[in-house]
Length: 352
Image (cartoon, rainbow, N blue to C red; front, side):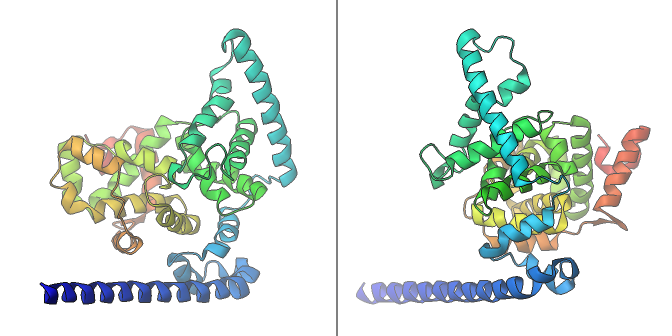
């Protein structure tokens, strides 16, 4: 028994040593990459961003110290929002909350539009309390509670046509962790203005169906066995993809892993969101093939917490985003055309 205990002790010590060695190596790599990003890439952003060397370095994950800056540059500011504009919309939000509070106490929201109710302080408050609850930093009394509240409120005034939609709080929270308040708002508004995010947050069913149809083309191409298994249960992508896309995986994956997904999403655009989805399905393919409809839906709604960056990105790398000779954008364009013309038989993803 003593000998066995000693063996276990040696084994555990070896395991701990190996983990520490890997962690040290990882920290060295991050420090080395940080120097390259700060001294070489960021000062020459437009020239270097698309080079093979930078793209490869980007794939490995951005060092936390430059992550926010790179995200901001990659997302861009097509909307030309300034910190001053953010302050204007934040002031309007505060006025609206005050007015709404008075209105609701007087007539119990009678006559208040749905958009106003969605933009109300109460709904935003409720969602903030559900945002990364284990971190205890966005909830009332936490250091980032007011910042998150301000950004979400300002956005509802900036884009009343979109309003506040559940899921937004997670995206804003991730940006707040990596950027200053005004910069986080600028990135948030521009990110939500991208075609895919706009389609989902405005609940544009027609566009959402086109994204799902395109996704299924690559699903069938990469994971034909699992694709047929899902089809046999009439399990459609909306059941699991909506939650993943709405929060850009920040609610579904561990935060550090979600940030790494964001890194490459900022590099590759919307295509990478769907490639990540296929990577997750590939990672758990063997398990999912043994499950029925209910268990698949439950599993994909709450992914295992022990999912690792190395395993997931290895699976994502194995996903080919090319259907025959067509890339994501070309397949998406074909799906748009097929739906428009009503010729659904030409698109494998749209066959019943």
